[in-house]
Length: 337
Image (cartoon, rainbow, N blue to C red; front, side, top):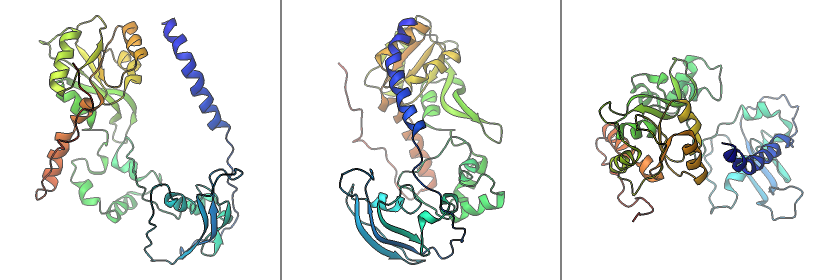
């Protein structure tokens, strides 16, 4: 164990330096004092230039941009990758400040508004959206934790999502962590009595949510590490399974689809003798052996692809007129001999 600690120190030091850089970074955005309410939403860029390092000598990402958008207009900003489209939009809510010119809302420089007032009047739908662990209701209330039930329902209707949400048995209380990759992975390995591996919290209905799953193998199916590795390879159609033998029969198994080797301590705390995941590093195999846990790497693709049939089943039921198929082109990236 002492050897493991010594091996982890360099990585921990680098991580600590990165964390300190973030904690010591000062907010360069100044707070405006205008209390005027934003009314019409007129947007104007007036000779705007921007570079990511304001004091640097690099080229401008945006250079002398001017345009005017009136309320109710639909405007598309078109350009190649890296030409500054996202940067331009990010200047409106002041995720960054311009290095030249002005961005104005209702004729007022955005830097003159208090940040909370400015951003409270702007809605954005980003290219890559994120669903947080928890219920649908909790996700909808991220922007306004004090929203009433009526406001939550109206937001869902405005997003054309109300009927879809209500198609779930628990409606707005549906836990978004349920039925995902890790549940499918546990089911593929025929585990029973499923529990959370890493619990992040409890939703308002009292249901736990988090990452990974823990389950038990059949009472009549206690296998050695090598035998279980062969079982995992067969059930997941994996190219191969790397494993470090913890020296115990396989009875209680943790699963984490994709790269979850960092959750080895959670598997140990849950009383598991085996942990099936992917992208396992050499030092994680050593740590597992020291803990007496059999750690298995079945491959990133194999441990996540198990969810695809469930997705096909769900989409086929929701959209019966549209054929849904699993890609035969996207396969495991490597082979084993």
